[in-house]
Structure formats: C-alpha cells, structure tokens
Length: 409
Image: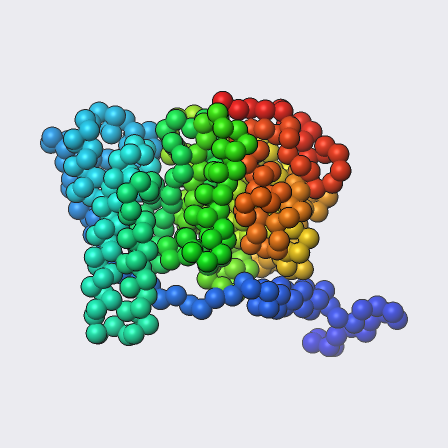
C-alpha cells in the first residue's frame, strides 16, 4: 500500500540510505561543536564608511577626468593610475581612502597610504561608538576593541593592502616588497577570522598576521636572496563558529571570487602560492578552476575538504599539496558532501591525489604555521620554489616528483 515501507531482506540494514547520510552529517556537527569549531555571534559594528565613499567616488574627477568605476577591471585601473603623478595619486588616496585602499590595479604604495588614512578615520568612529551610551555595553566594548585594532594596523611601517570596516571587517597585510617580489605567498585562513582576530598577542601563530610573519621569516631563512612577499589575507567573510555556514560552501563561493580578484590584481608577473588553512581550503578549492595561471601552488593544511573528489576535479594547473598533523581533530570529521552539506573527499587521502607534505611537529589543528615546525618549513620551501627539498609525509620523494628542484630568483 502507498506510504508503507517495503520489508527488508534478511541481514540487510533496515535504515534507508538517506537516514544513514543524515546520521553522518549529524556526526559532522557534533564533531565541530566538540572540537573547537565554535564561537559566539559577533554583532556588526561601525558605520557604512565604504558605502558612503563609493557614492562619492562615482562623481570624483582628476583634472576634469572621471575616475574609473570601483569595480573596473584591474587593467583599466592600472592604466588610469599610471597616467597620474605622485601628487594626484596621493590626493585620491587621501580623499577616498575606503575606495582606493581596496582598488585592484592601484599601486600598492597608494593603497597602503589610503588604508592608513581609512584606519585612522574608522578608528575615530569606533572611539565615538565606545562612548555612546545609547549602545549596549557589549556593543560599546566591541567598538573599543575595534578602535584599538585599527590603531594597531595603522602603525607606521605596516603595509595594509585591503581594509573595509563594514560589518566584521575585511583586511589584508603585506610582508616584504610586493612590487619587487618574484614569488608571493597568500595565507587563506578559516573560520572565525575577521578584523578583530586578524592578529593576536596570545596564540600569535594561529592568527593570519602571525601565520604570515612566521612564513615570511622561514622563507628568508631558507632562501635569503630570494625576492618573496607574504600576504596575510582576511579578505572574505568567514563563517562564525559552528553552523550551516561552516558546513556548506556558501561563504566559500564569495571568498573564492575575492581570492581570484586578489591574485589577478597583484603587481608584476610574480608566481603565487596559496596556503589555505581549515575552511580556507574550501575557499581555495572552490576558487581553483578560476584562478589565473600565475597561481602555481595550492597548499591545504587541516582541510575539511575542497569540494572536489580529487585533484582532477579542481580543474587547476597548479600543484596541489596537502598536510595534516596526526593530532588534528579535523581528521575525525566525516569527509563527505551531500546536498551542499560537507566539503567532500579528504585531501590527504591517497585517492585524492595531492602531494602529501610532512607536518610531524605541527601540534594539532592550529599549529601548522608555528616557527620550527615541519609544516612551516615545507611551506617556506614551496613559497621560495625550493621544491626539491620539501619533506614528504611518507618516506621517499613521492610528493616531489614532477617538480623542479628550485625556482628561486
């Protein structure tokens, strides 16, 4: 009769496949909730400074010439700024910092200047919010924290390539000389990354700034004469804690668009290596097929999956590397994807086909960029092009096969 279940054969599992899938997904959420992939909700703060700046930019002129749209192609923006003198570039940076500081194709030095000014202005807004008795105590406390973070990022010598205070904030910082670099490494972090968690005093190397500093120092130690730069990139809205956002690729899709824009806008013809941690590897996996050819290497650490069943499914010409510490809890999360939930196959499984790197001393899920670890040493070698000396996860040279021994410049 309709609506009645059919009897099962003797010895067969009475649970339908759909129920088994739901149980597996439940395990995913339980594991995430009990292993640290959690956080409290962070309320949005600040005023729409960038929105107001975009409106003003639409009517901006330089010597009577209209400026390019904020979403203009990189080449269009680059040609426009190439036709300006230093004073004209400075006036645009000073007058429209929240646009120029995020404008792909604008010179790096001009963006650094704009973002320093933007950070100072946004800090003033947050200082006022911190004293606003109309706000809740929690919102005032968040505003004070944001004002302190903006002041830190605006300190002399820091090279802020991206800054948008909207919502939880977007930010990216450069270590090294981006214009002169022959190889650029980009840190793509995971969940709970925003302007407040961009750098930390405690557990320094679990935050994007600490990760990038550690990688840059390791590269300089491994290849002192090589011209490299490292970008700490919190340029996408990452999931906040446990929930649907962390278990799906929705936010990774937006992050992938932004990651592609970053790699397209980098100056010169430098090669690019992506170092993608945790949910950041989902972003890199979604972006892989649309990344420019200058992205030669994609490295994932502590990955929940790349939303592909194997390297071939990423549709990229880049070398794909993967690593995971044996104590990393992400190994216990089921690697599957059903109906948009989950992120697919395990990148360190032999069937996936990635080049497997040693992470013998990484110490759990957040330790891959700590100084002195096998993982960060391997990252530095990939970042400098010294592929012949990377240490594989297994004995032998399986992960090095097909790579040139050194591509340093």
